[in-house]
Image (cartoon, rainbow, N blue to C red):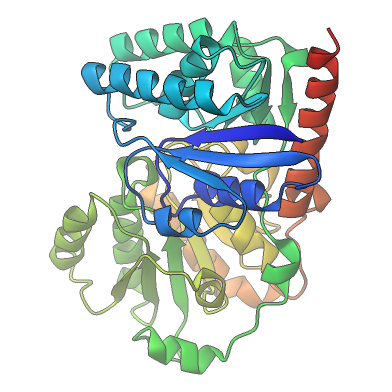
Length: 381
């Protein structure tokens, strides 16, 4: 059996994190021994510790922010762990763990190093100098990366354009969802709405996302305010939490939405909440391929979102939703109103267009194939 070590910066309720947990817990134990290393504390840490047959390590100095001393210490700690474990594959996720984890893997002499691109750490809101530095670091560690996985064709094309890898070094492996489980999710909608503090007989528009800058949660609050100007019957929910929650609460109060917009915090019943939505909204400024789009579309809930990275690979304008440019609050509000007016037409059948490639079991199978192929190739030389 071959030891496969996954490294990720923080285990919060995000797509990359949830899918990494699913991968390590579902790898074929007849072939692979899974290990998970994470950094700063996250909401999913206890779940990770409880995974049967998965060795779990936490390196607290591995944090999202750039902290030179902590970053150096994190590389030393990761290298120490990897030298002790001697995995045949190190598979990194997220930007910070992707850089530090790959450096540690090289220092520890790990033969196969894989990095999954769930979107890039280079973002439109960063200072140009910082972007150049980060791109330089990505290029440096990319030279010694055996293989890349990308969750979207858009991310793969961007990596090629940035000269991070040649086309043959990157495979598109979708960050999947459990399509079957989502599609068969059923709930007593009136009862569930009451449990959430909602009127069971009024439409609901919702967003599921951490309250951080990337997701632009204040834009969702503003979308809600604009929709309410012409349709005061609509209710709104936000599932998630984070550092911007005080700003969200302040903007909600300023716009007079304290009774109309419900902040539900972190929830583990997201599929049941999605069943209560008439429209799903995502206001992200940048993404790889939002898992939240996949979850909503798998349940035939129309989407209004931003045209980021891989979004156009799943959301088709006028078929299962609409895409607009990040920050276009007025445009998103207008499309929400269109979907509320014509929801019955769009939702009569499942127009999600999500095929097998978006299923989480297919994601694991593809990764296992890649692991085995690389192991056979590298270890035979």
